[in-house]
Length: 291
View 1 (cartoon, helix red, strand yellow):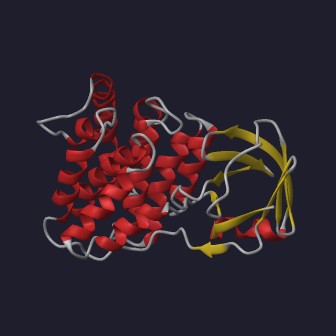
View 2 (view 1 turned 60 degrees about the vertical axis):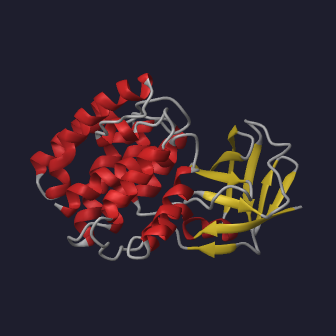
């Protein structure tokens, strides 16, 4: 029997539910399950805790699981064909991002500098943030042009989430130029939206209801334009939930500059380009929320 080490609070209900479903996709260190119509990730211990992930204990592996296998949650057990995973002893953690303290002057510039110096060439970070000494490859640069146009069209929403005209413009921009754009399990456009949603959760100084409204406008417009796996992460961001590296970044915003740089580097290790692309969206929104 394998054991889970961590569960986000949003998945704690699995320990008291009876749900059935199947395996949707399997990768080297993770698998995705449909349980009662909800997508849940099963993650190796060496992956960071995520907002939709059941994190396995150290020493366990994603093995013997294949797409299409039946899956079921009952009591404190998760069953996948012949594999049994004990959820009973897993530590429950709160994936909800907290509001950030006011960051010292120059913090955003420090994050952007670290991001642009370390982002992979396949990332759209340099293209989106307008770096003159862009390290982006040709594909990322081409994607970045469309993404920048979409971002420009949705900027008004961040300034005034209650404006219906701004909301309509943002929906159109997300649908036409951002959602689902780019290759990978979570496309670059979707990762940007996750970063923007995280900024609205933690940096927005207006009442939380306004930040939540803006997140919902952006994410709802993207859900039908992307893959199911990416949509699950977008929905988590809409709810204000994020992976552990984002929590480290938010905690470091009001602290020492070296801690902030380390948090950025940790976030950049997420996926091939997902961490860099999402952080680009966060920094883009950060600049506009500060203004």
